[in-house]
Image (cartoon, rainbow over all chains, first blue to last red; front, side):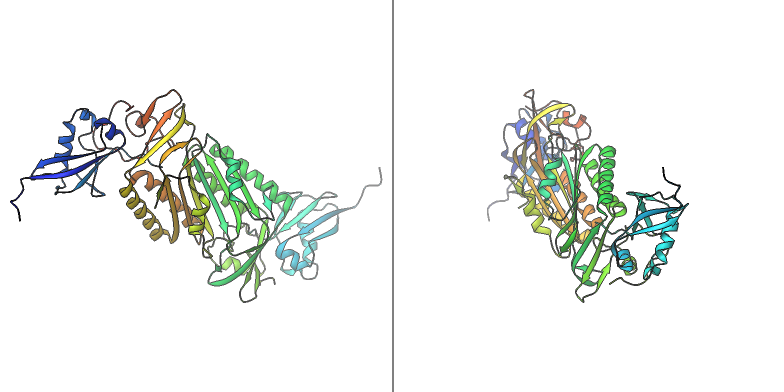
Length: 87
Length: 87
Length: 163
Length: 163
């Protein structure tokens, strides 16, 4: 075993209007431990162009909808979902 | 003009189970004036095999649903309709 | 013509009502089922008072189109139908789905209630029964092969099946 | 697979659910409409979070089949769709029509509410807008091209269209 990590690296997926706001549909972010969904969103909102990202967007962690309190683990896939408009 | 008629001749149409009861799907009946739908039904129910015809079946006169009180005129087409079961 | 002796082609009904204005299209198919109250059904035989049935179908379609701002296509098959055959097909297209569903539902209910069409069931045991007379009424709800939506005669009704 | 980039074939969805047990078959097609709140629409562009959308569609279908004793087929198209193209198709087959209609209606409502799919409208005046963000929300009800059934973000939302 290596030394205990003090950060967590996750993959963030962006869709539709949010991908356009950030100019990317996928990016990796590194957060200090302990990290929750809200911390990842806060980090994203600090990026250029992302000021119009909502503070509490709909989020899915590893394909399941989650709340902002949900903890993040290494390798997690966090999807930030704009208002749905299927159908 | 000829003399005033004292009877009215109408065409009766029978369907589905009622046609089977009476062994016919169409017959002509002659009724004394004044004649109403109920008089035609009463005449039919006196025919052999027709005792199971209801006293007040659903009736249509010239393609429109009518009540037993409706008067009959020469040449009318009276349809006696079993309970509907389309669909 | 709303009645037909030929198999019903859903595609041609869809084509009748599809339009660039329509975003919601609801349809209903009534098919011949292999069972009725636990008994095995072999086929159904449909007959109609055709001129009145055509007139009544036209009225029902007009009512639905007026009430929900939609386009409605309707076909009812007559003659001998086997298991899985489509007896009635309805397509309702509107700008929005609420109207399409409401119109489609209205039309099937009114067709069953108002259109002079009759069916008799041919069972696996050889029995033949007109739906809606006597036995049919006691069977409870069903799709095809039941009388719960049929116009009931306002008097007595045959107490035995008509063979 | 519930999502597809190819045109949706209603016939194959019907074939998936038809059975001798089923007397009532309700279906819904959501098609691309040529207008949205008085503005002329040229085409829609659908995208999805595909693995989650597949999982959510499967859950919705299972829920409907469990609740109404029916068989459900569902397809949602993604990519570029033109006026009249079918974006979503649902077929629900059951012994009786009440169940078929209820299941069909449930599935379209839940698909719109829960499945991570997005569309943007391309208007005749050249504007391109994501449905459900800003403008979309103000447009009122609509079939395709509206957000009234979409999950709303629990915070602020972009105030301008994203070009």
